[in-house]
Every structure is written in structure tokens, then in C-alpha cells.
Image (cartoon, rainbow, N blue to C red):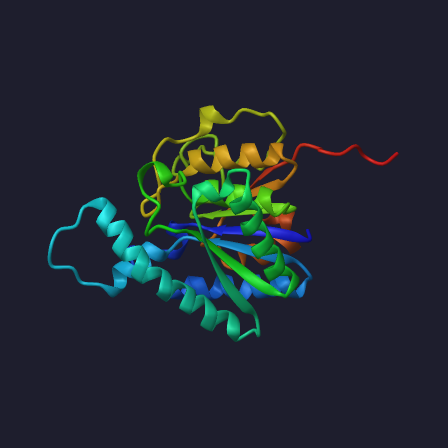
Length: 262
């Protein structure tokens, strides 16, 4: 792998009380720094702004869902990126923030500008940290979730691999709590797993396994390897590189987009 996109979901970065889990965030930063030492370019798509903002503010009056999203994300995004800045600085890694909206992925100048921005960041050894601009992206302007966003980023930046970190090991043949559940380790191109996908969404995010499956299927069709893994597992990113066969995850084999050399 030369370039990967790592999507860190809300349930990975959020504690049970809904606040940001700084300890896990620090552990993931350590692993991303290790990836870079292996010569791998990394782009991070990070949730957690809402959780970060919710932990900062004490609101004594009611807010509707849009107001909460705008307020908590506006305050939380500053704290979230500040934490990333401090944590990566310990490794001498510079980070840059990229806030985007769905319209930036339509063909045209905004798409080219966003791609050029992230390209020059990577060329100058700056790690992009991407999130949706939640302060202005509401209703029809929103991505389905950061799974969708990370898939679009992976395709825009021609990544080799997209890693979707959730709070479970991958896709199972039935509910993961069922003792008979089996982890589906490999998904061949075109294989339909819809019968195994649970409809519920994640506790703190807008996505869920259905969203991850949809994103993985689309992105693998574009020739990019996709891995769904458990971000709560210790050293998960390192293990996916060094001990891939022994590390629980679901992997979508990419469609071969160019002919093999003869």
C-alpha cells in the first residue's frame, strides 16, 4: 500500500457518555504515525466533532437537531483538530484540516480545487484530516455519513486502500452478538451481502454497517481495496499491515481496473 484513507467513525472516537475518547484517539494517532514511517501516505477522515463539542458546552435550553449539529460541530471541530495537532506534533507530523461538502464532489472547479489542495498537502508531507463542514451542511446538502465521504475521498485521491474503522470486526453472517455469527473475511467483486446487513445505525453517528457495506461495494468496484475493521482493537492499523491474515476484519477485493501485465 502506498496511499490509504483511514475513516475513524463516531463510535470509535466516542465514549459511552457521548464525549470524545481522547485515549483511543491518541492510540490511533500512534498507529498512523507508524504507517507513515513505513512509507505509506495517509489521509484521515475523522468523525468526532459533535462529540467534542457536546463535551465542551452546557446548554440550559432546548435546541432542535439542526441547531445542535451546527453548534456542537462548530465548537467541537476546533477542539478535535487541536487535539490531532498536539498528538501528531509529538511525532513531528504536520496536519491540515479539510472541511468539505457534497457539492465539492461534483465535476468542476470545486472538485479540482479540493483535489489539488490535498495533493499539495501530501506532496509536502502534510497529513490531511477531512470532515464534513457540519456547520453549513444540513438536510439535502449532507453526505449520508462519513463512510460515504471517505469513499469519495479515496476515489478522488486514487488511494490504494480504504480502511473503515467501526466498533465491530466487520460483516457477520448474523447479528455479532449471536453465538453462531461468523465473520465474513473476504468479499469477492460482485458478491451480494445484503442479506447479512443489519439495518440499525450506529449509536453516535449517522451511519451503520449498511452504510459501510454500500461504500465498500462502490469503492471496490472502482479498483480500491476496502477493509472494515474494529477501531477499538488495540493496534488494529498496525496489525492489518503486519498480521493481516490473523487480524479479524472484512476485506473487499477490488475489481481489476487495468489488465495484468503478460
